[in-house]
Image (tube, rainbow, N blue to C red; front, side, top):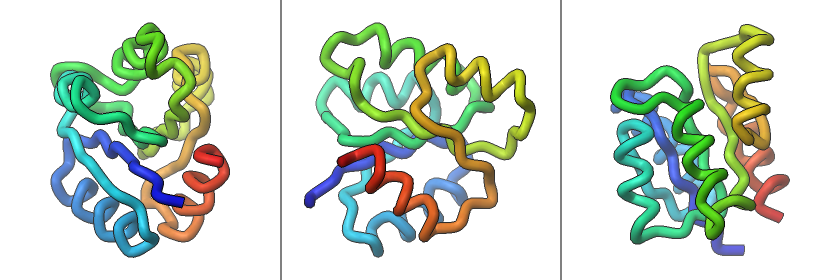
Length: 121
């Protein structure tokens, strides 16, 4: 199964960790620095799964998820939130925006890979 994952995070260190973990698991990884950059990437890429942070400049994860869900071609793409946030209200807000799942940083690479396989199936 050749799965493409778009990771969206403003932290270069986090993007590097995600790329390392996901490439090692056999995924094709494309990356964006924030929600606006991710929307630009989506013009030319069709990921199977999106992993996004919430707290980012220019466009946060909530706005990005809403934009993805408004795009008919991407409406069904699974979106996993990967964040340091543990607040129930923010989890609910992400779910209402259209998030598929929620993973707290620091992440366990094996659990992230399992979650991606689950939602990409």
